[in-house]
Image (cartoon, rainbow, N blue to C red; front, side, top):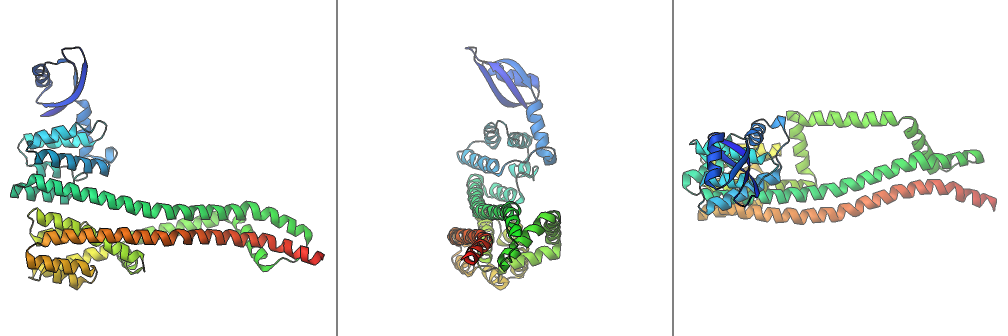
Length: 405
């Protein structure tokens, strides 16, 4: 089965465009005629290229996360409404006109039509559908709960997108303020201070220490700006290389967890991501041990990922999940306590989901507090820098006025 783009005319002469699946171009024409459409043009190239791009992500642009989330939600709605899987894939694919997601879904549909399971068809596109998605779909197929499992995965993806947007919003504004502070400082030191320094040199009076230090900093920046850029760029490059190494990445992740406010935010965010993932897997019928192993790979902090690996080994030896997580020492106590209650009541997956909800709400509150403290702090620092430079300029003027009297 291949995908074909077509242009056709209906009985009233109105041009119709779309995509259909057929074994050949001739079969595609027959399908159009059965719909009382007159074929004008049929070409397989567009969706075929899209499918090829889906197989080779390096040859095309990456698919947006929002498109993946939207596709998951639409598939969940259609399959929950008892729509056949291949038809649900076709309908969902038609919603993406100019996205590579269309080719991915049509290729998955072709595999399903040929006899593959949905999880196998999605696993053929690991750059689009991660291992967690395919594992949940496979569990849903086995349990006969594909629709609810897809709905749960769509909920998780939407929650992850919401958290990602909050993280982006929490980091962009402070970085923008820091950039503005740096630009203002450089402009003052390289454009304003040199002109004022020329006037002070003509007067020949001894300048205050603050003014001399500001002029020295201005002269150094003007004559050695290239060295400053090299030092900053080299430091950033060395830091990036160190952070990418195994030991460096682990030490950096451990340092982030020990930071006063940011460490708590990172810990809650990672624990929420892990809890959300394992809740979906357990609810789909995946055993707790396999769910922990799969959810471990969603953690970005290597310290917490290694801790979950140790906890998985303890669970394999017979320890309860709550006790294994408690021994790691990196998970918030609320997660351990809620999982302990879930194990006692047989609702482990539901309690993981509730702990994820709680931690995400904590993340929202902590982010708001962090921003409310950071924004005025950056403004104060920026104002302080400008005030120091202004004081360095006006102190000699005030000194001259005093001497004149």
